[in-house]
Length: 429
Ligand code: CMC
Image (cartoon, rainbow, N blue to C red; front, top):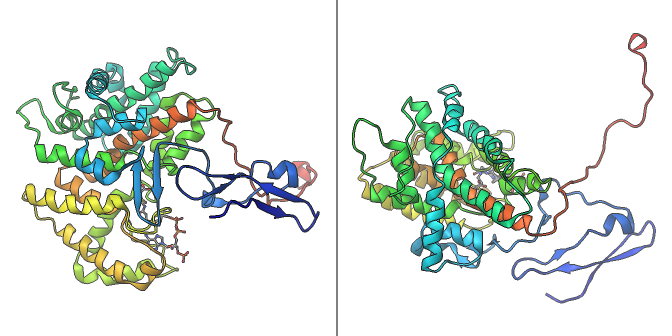
């Protein structure tokens, strides 16, 4: 690409404006339009932010056309194969992989903060037994602001990092607490002798009456899924965390907002919707009918777990999860007919002109639910799994923003309501 500046000309006023080009280390060149309103008197219109970079960031890089995802420069495939979730968490938070002593210290810090205040369990038990766990998570994580707000100095980098670590540490404890409340089981306390995902599985499934052995296959599968979900640059929930953070709000409140954004079926809620959809399809013979429905503009039905705003190629996370799903099912000796159904659906959709033309491929949520199901995670908890993993992305992005001069996020609008009119007294209307 040449280095000529981009000049826009307003044919109405005859004025021109040279727009600086911002070039990151990788990715598309980006026009800096900051001076546009003051210079030419125009705003820009970009609903859904399809053409807008809201910040600069050095955490995660995606090349959607090539299907590339990197955390801090490391390809997701290498991290998935060679790293573990806690090491990836360190990488996202601090920018580089830790050495041995840094890793030990980080593991110690996270482990040390896994317990929650006992009053928080009272908070969880206040919910009705059938409350959706994502609703509980948003409420309970938001309530952490009430536990830590006064002691937190947002100007202090150490305080900010501590809040970030607390959230990474406590999220599994709270998630398991929400599940156990639904089941009517007593709260389980984090056993610090376990590693991160083992500890979580133990809190999820152990009961006081009998021993519970954490399956290494399950722990490794969960760890892999957590790595793959850990960050994804400026997606809807991360942008929400940043937007709330830009007001100076407490970080626990920011993450609670991120959880709410994640819950929607167009975002993290898709993993739950994929299995609901596969249930509805029921049989391989009915796949074609549902693919046709997804193509019908007059039918609101979409193939859940398909399509992505950024990836116009196979989502690299989906490729990894697809292989892992086969391995996990084989290792656990389970034969899930939903896996066959999902594969048939993928095959038919990937050969279909509609999906080919629109570059719609399976995304991270397409196969993840099949693994969660094999691990015994109930469907309503799928998006909670996503939230546990994404917490490290949210807090890394929040920390990065807090360390960068930031203005409050405040988009504009194109007003298309009524023009000025005079108030008329109620009796005269
Ligand atoms: N099934 C059928 N058609 C689809 C699908 C789908 N899953 N996704 C997109 N399209 C069509 C859409 O109708 C539109 O067609 P047209 O150009 O004729 O209007 C075109 O493809 C572009 O779609 P869009 O909705 O404008 O694209 P977007 O970037 O705004 O939305 C998306 C991206 C992920 C919300 C969307 O693809 C979707 O709803 N997918 C299903 C839900 C899903 O799996 N979400 C998880 C996303 S990945 C993980 C995460 O973010 O949490």
